[in-house]
Picture 1 (cartoon, rainbow over the protein chains, first blue to last red):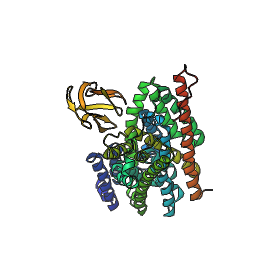
Picture 2: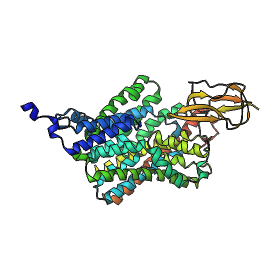
Picture 3: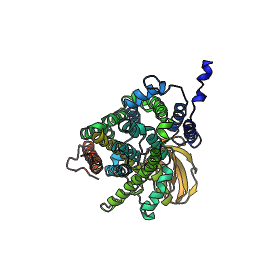
Length: 367
Length: 71
Length: 49
């Protein structure tokens, strides 16, 4: 009986079942522990569904999810649209108020490059190493954007690593922050910086686009969309567009992003020795980035009388706003009247830009 | 010597712990703000009596907005 | 050209140069913003901090 010869269950492999467990674990983490649920839930489900036999969902040219993946991710449409939404949500006030904090976001890219170096020492190709390194930038869409162009076979693993570690920032960062700072340093109160005018916040996205894209043209898809979203928000004259970018558009694109990323993780793509390395290196990247941000803040303190609380340097790891929250909480532990949150947002946002620049440079040199 | 308690960051007022007329000591909890999905407690800057409360539960405040006055 | 070392150096310095340029731009915005806000006192130089 032909139907019973084509039962899906007959084509099941052990690898697929392992992937189900992984997918279900991600769904569990999303639902029960609320780890980045907006991404990990669809990713987890995508993993599950892509590892069901004979569905044809990921068949090149024909599969439903393949189409979402091809036109959304391979064609590099979805990550820039996510950035449009992110820009519409972002308030650059804290950064504009104290410009010097922008260097902490640059320093935090140290983890990206050191991990890149380590990965290629372990035998990964330059393109693969760049993709693994960018996990340290703690930015999901940028990781996916880079992976799709340089190492698509690692996209799923790198994305899951990035989003998982972003959710785990409250666990990963504090030990490093305690190790590299003294109690005294953690108590530093930062001086309230200047008020930022609406006009500055309006001109910033325009000027930033010019500066960054003229320097690193390959970063244009992400930066231009990010700054456009920000321009919508700061112009205050296109509230409908801002609202759409912040909400409807973000949500739609997030759904497709999560599902397609999960669906790339078929058993043969994911169950390889490489993947353990990716998760280990990704964790190293986060840790080193945290350390680099902290250390630059301490270095800057040698040259200024207006001290920076080094904890905000850790927020250069651009898991927005998780890392800023962690910096604030660590500061409040040392001195409960110390309110570091807004100061920490400066490096947090500049880390996003830094990661995009790093990705753009990788693309320029390796794409 | 009235001292104004200003908002240390922008956020939404979640709860107010004291009423007008209450005696507070320095570092007592005055109210809770929510910012970036995180609760932050605002503490009394000095000893005194609460003479006015400008903040209302549910209100969105900006950095440096007056929250309370303590005499 | 494309050795790991050169990518490392180019990359990290590229990030700092890019961020550095943004820093200068932001400082410029701050100075201009101060100047636009105080048309009466042209003699006051904008505080750069």
